[in-house]
Length: 353
Ligand code: SAM
Ligand code: SF4
Image 1 (cartoon, rainbow, N blue to C red):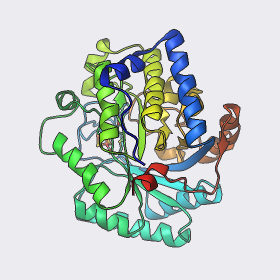
Image 2 (cartoon, rainbow, N blue to C red):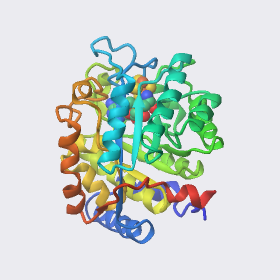
Image 3 (cartoon, protein in one colour):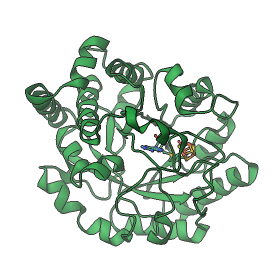
C-alpha cells in the first residue's frame, strides 16, 4: 500500500505554519495517527560520528572543508567496532555510521571492511545505517553487499534555487546529483532516508510544503529533519538576521513532523538532535507527536566536541553511558515504549516492495 497525497501544497503550508489551537490540534491528530498505524514503539540507532573530515563546503555546516578552526579527527576501526558493540550490548538494535563526505578509494574500501567487521563481531545482530553523503552507484552497491541496509541522505530543500543559496554552485554540490543518489540508493535496495533543514534563511512555508510532497513523491522510507541552527564559523551565519526565532523554528519543525506523519503514516521519522539543541525535551516532544526513532550519540566524548555542525550542540560533554541511562525514562515520560534489541525497519519499505 502506497499512501497517496491527501493534501495540496496550500493546505500543507497552512498546517506547517500553524500556531495556537491549530498547532495543538495538528499535533494531537498526528499523535493519534501514529498510535493507530505504527504503534507506541520507539527504536534506537546508536549514532557514531566517526570522522569530521569532509570534502564539501555546505554554507551552513560547522565541519565544512574550509572551516580551518575545526580540529579534524577520524576514529580508528577498533574505536568504531567498540562503539558498535556498546550499542549491541545496550540493546540498541541498530547503529548509524555518519561522517563528513569523502569518496576516495581508500575510504570506500575502509567502509566496506568496517561493515564486514561489525557484521562479523555482532553476529549480524545490528541493523546498519550509513550517512556518508553522495557516492556513485557502485559504491552504494558495494557497501550494501558488505552489510549496510539503510542510508540517510537529506536533499536539504526541494527548491533548487534555495539549494544553491545554501551550497556553492559547483561540481561537488550539484542538486541533480543529490537526487540521482537517492534514486541509486533505492535501486540498490536500501531503505532510503532523507530530510531537510527547517527555518533556513529565505525558506517559506510553501518551500517546506513542497519538501513534504517531494518526500512523498520519492516514496521515501525514513525521514530525519530538524531546525537549521547557526554556526558562527560558516558563511550562512552572515544571514542570521533573516532567521525566524529559534522557538518558531522549533514549532514549525514539530508541525513538519506532524504533517508528514499524516501524509506518510507508515514511514520511520527520527526525532533529530537539533530539536534537543533548542529545547532539552525537544526530541521527546517529537516522539509524542509522530516521530518513532531516536538516535542517541555513542561517539566517544573526546571526539564529540569536534563534530559541531552548529553552535551549542547538546550532549558534547557526555559519554555514551550518560546519554543512554536516561533514555528509557524520557521515552516513557511521553507515553512511548522503547523497542530494545529490534532493528525497527521502516514498515513503509516492506509495504512498497
Ligand atoms: N556529510 C553527510 C551529509 O551531508 O549527508 C552526513 C553528515 S551531515 C553533518 C548530516 C546532516 O547535518 C546534513 O544533511 C544537514 O542537514 C545537517 N546539518 C549540517 N549543518 C547543520 C546546521 N547548521 N543546522 C542543522 N542541521 C545541519
Ligand atoms: Fe560535509 Fe555533510 Fe557538513 Fe555538507 S553537511 S559540509 S557534506 S558534513
